[in-house]
Length: 397
Image 1 (cartoon, helix red, strand yellow):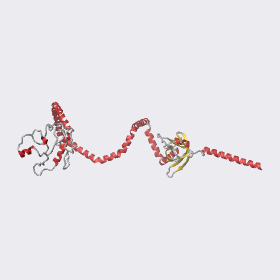
Image 2 (cartoon, one colour; image 1 turned 45 degrees about the vertical axis):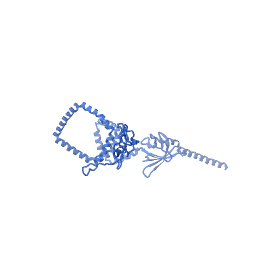
Image 3 (tube, rainbow, N blue to C red; image 1 turned 180 degrees about the vertical axis):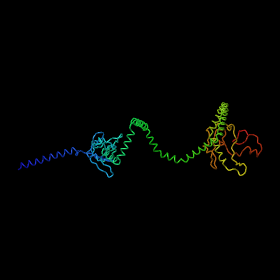
Image 4 (cartoon, rainbow, N blue to C red; image 1 turned 30 degrees about the horizontal axis):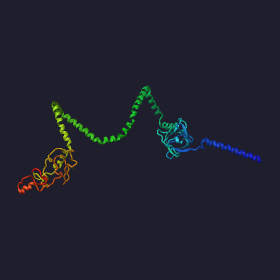
């Protein structure tokens, strides 16, 4: 009895081990013990031939499989992927996703395509990608074709196909030549498509601008018609004017041509004058601008001349030879430096000291001189000898 119990126990253990081996092998075959990274792909549709466990490839290399497919309330499909962690670093975050198939009847798979400028970051767990393209199955084509044919009446379709066949009968060569010419024309037109798109985009603004200016354009055309009519009506006068201008031009040509050398000499002689005027243009402008207030001031109530006279403190008489006049001033015009030509009310421009041989504010001038020779002669009569002023001592009277 004990021996039978041991044998039964061994048999049960053997069956359990065999069952466990089968389960482990099945899970290993299905990848149940393989660690994966979940990624979700949202597509407009999953397709009729997309199933779980479908391949996920990138550049022809398997990188995972489809875990499940979920229909979203928006009508789209959420395809949950299980990617191999070892391949995750090779898949950029901005990878493109296509739902493709080997043939129109074959099962679909998820194809990952790296872009031309891949992102330095890799896809991460839980990331959501958008499918760019879903291959159309032959079933879908047949479905749409059946719906179209159901709307078409067979006799009218037959008439249409017969008319098309009659139209193309014997014209294959011409049709081929036409298609070839159309291909050449489109090849020449293709480089200009960006410009054409830009022109179409800006066309509304241009049309609106023309619409806004349409009244002015119509007025211009109307004025042009009136001008043309006036030219036609004044044709004889215009001919006479042109003849007169031709004679004037010939006379002017004779006058200028005959006096060419004299005009050239005059222009050469004017060069120093114009250079001097250009050098002192600021002073000339300052002078003319200063006359503007006088020209704009109100006139006198009666014809007269207004003179402002006042008495100022006298200065010493000119001395010899330091007060002899000379032309040695330098520095150019100082119109703007002196605040000219606009002088504020109750003010005067500062005195500019230049090397012209006289300076009323030179060092040593005593200003008002009470002990003058004229005062002594007025009081005491003529006095012999030179003046007795200390500042004029030793100078001729």
